[in-house]
Image (cartoon, rainbow, N blue to C red; front, side, top):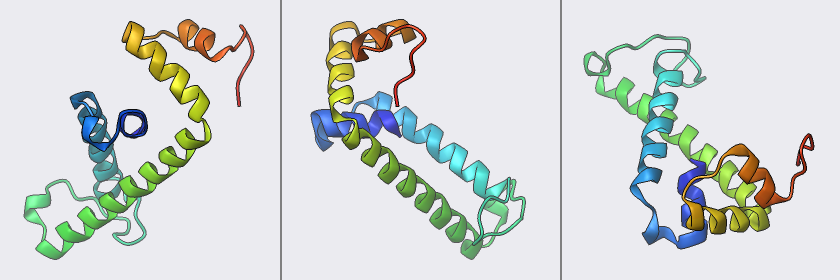
Length: 120
Protein backbone atom coordinates (compact mmCIF):
# COMPACT_ATOMS: atom_id res chain seq x y z
CA UNK A 1 0.00 0.00 0.00
CA UNK A 2 2.84 2.37 0.78
CA UNK A 3 4.22 2.37 -2.74
CA UNK A 4 0.87 3.12 -4.30
CA UNK A 5 0.02 5.92 -1.86
CA UNK A 6 3.52 7.39 -2.17
CA UNK A 7 3.17 7.53 -5.95
CA UNK A 8 -0.22 9.24 -5.59
CA UNK A 9 1.19 11.82 -3.17
CA UNK A 10 4.31 12.51 -5.25
CA UNK A 11 3.04 12.20 -8.83
CA UNK A 12 -0.76 12.49 -8.58
CA UNK A 13 -3.63 10.01 -8.85
CA UNK A 14 -3.23 9.58 -12.60
CA UNK A 15 0.47 8.67 -12.46
CA UNK A 16 0.38 5.47 -10.38
CA UNK A 17 2.58 2.81 -12.00
CA UNK A 18 2.03 -0.93 -12.47
CA UNK A 19 4.46 -1.54 -9.60
CA UNK A 20 1.86 -0.01 -7.32
CA UNK A 21 -0.68 -2.42 -8.84
CA UNK A 22 1.45 -5.27 -7.53
CA UNK A 23 1.31 -3.75 -4.02
CA UNK A 24 -2.47 -3.74 -4.26
CA UNK A 25 -2.61 -7.37 -5.44
CA UNK A 26 -0.44 -8.52 -2.56
CA UNK A 27 -2.35 -6.48 0.03
CA UNK A 28 -5.69 -7.78 -1.26
CA UNK A 29 -4.47 -11.36 -1.23
CA UNK A 30 -3.18 -11.01 2.34
CA UNK A 31 -6.38 -9.33 3.58
CA UNK A 32 -8.54 -12.02 1.96
CA UNK A 33 -6.37 -14.71 3.58
CA UNK A 34 -6.71 -13.00 6.98
CA UNK A 35 -10.52 -12.76 6.70
CA UNK A 36 -11.44 -15.98 4.90
CA UNK A 37 -8.81 -18.40 6.16
CA UNK A 38 -7.57 -17.10 9.50
CA UNK A 39 -10.81 -15.90 11.05
CA UNK A 40 -9.41 -12.40 11.60
CA UNK A 41 -12.73 -10.60 11.17
CA UNK A 42 -15.30 -9.95 13.86
CA UNK A 43 -18.02 -9.62 11.22
CA UNK A 44 -17.25 -12.96 9.56
CA UNK A 45 -16.11 -14.74 12.67
CA UNK A 46 -13.79 -17.68 13.26
CA UNK A 47 -14.44 -19.57 10.05
CA UNK A 48 -12.19 -21.08 7.40
CA UNK A 49 -13.34 -20.50 3.82
CA UNK A 50 -11.02 -22.13 1.31
CA UNK A 51 -13.22 -21.86 -1.79
CA UNK A 52 -15.25 -18.70 -2.18
CA UNK A 53 -17.10 -20.11 -5.19
CA UNK A 54 -18.73 -22.68 -2.89
CA UNK A 55 -20.06 -19.97 -0.57
CA UNK A 56 -23.35 -18.11 -0.72
CA UNK A 57 -23.48 -14.72 -2.40
CA UNK A 58 -24.11 -13.23 1.04
CA UNK A 59 -20.92 -14.77 2.49
CA UNK A 60 -18.84 -13.70 -0.52
CA UNK A 61 -20.19 -10.14 -0.19
CA UNK A 62 -19.46 -10.09 3.53
CA UNK A 63 -15.89 -11.27 2.95
CA UNK A 64 -15.40 -8.71 0.18
CA UNK A 65 -16.73 -5.95 2.45
CA UNK A 66 -14.31 -6.92 5.22
CA UNK A 67 -11.36 -7.09 2.81
CA UNK A 68 -12.28 -3.71 1.34
CA UNK A 69 -12.57 -2.22 4.82
CA UNK A 70 -9.17 -3.57 5.86
CA UNK A 71 -7.53 -2.17 2.72
CA UNK A 72 -9.17 1.24 3.09
CA UNK A 73 -8.06 1.41 6.74
CA UNK A 74 -4.50 0.47 5.77
CA UNK A 75 -4.50 3.03 2.97
CA UNK A 76 -5.66 5.77 5.34
CA UNK A 77 -2.98 4.88 7.91
CA UNK A 78 -0.19 4.86 5.33
CA UNK A 79 -1.46 8.11 3.78
CA UNK A 80 -1.37 9.78 7.21
CA UNK A 81 2.12 8.41 7.87
CA UNK A 82 3.50 9.53 4.51
CA UNK A 83 1.97 12.99 4.86
CA UNK A 84 3.51 13.30 8.33
CA UNK A 85 6.85 12.25 6.85
CA UNK A 86 6.52 14.36 3.71
CA UNK A 87 10.10 15.65 3.84
CA UNK A 88 11.52 12.13 4.02
CA UNK A 89 9.14 10.91 1.31
CA UNK A 90 10.27 13.69 -1.02
CA UNK A 91 13.95 12.93 -0.39
CA UNK A 92 13.45 9.23 -1.07
CA UNK A 93 11.34 9.90 -4.17
CA UNK A 94 14.04 12.16 -5.60
CA UNK A 95 16.73 9.55 -4.89
CA UNK A 96 14.62 6.80 -6.49
CA UNK A 97 14.07 8.93 -9.60
CA UNK A 98 17.84 9.11 -9.97
CA UNK A 99 18.79 5.52 -9.08
CA UNK A 100 15.53 3.48 -9.36
CA UNK A 101 16.49 1.23 -6.43
CA UNK A 102 18.06 1.91 -3.06
CA UNK A 103 19.58 -0.46 -0.54
CA UNK A 104 19.40 0.06 3.21
CA UNK A 105 22.68 1.98 3.40
CA UNK A 106 21.60 4.31 0.59
CA UNK A 107 18.22 4.93 2.23
CA UNK A 108 19.92 5.81 5.51
CA UNK A 109 22.31 8.10 3.67
CA UNK A 110 19.48 9.90 1.86
CA UNK A 111 17.61 10.36 5.14
CA UNK A 112 20.73 11.46 7.02
CA UNK A 113 20.66 8.52 9.43
CA UNK A 114 24.05 7.63 10.85
CA UNK A 115 25.20 4.04 11.25
CA UNK A 116 23.64 2.43 14.32
CA UNK A 117 21.11 5.24 14.68
CA UNK A 118 17.37 4.69 14.35
CA UNK A 119 14.94 7.30 13.10
CA UNK A 120 11.51 7.71 14.62
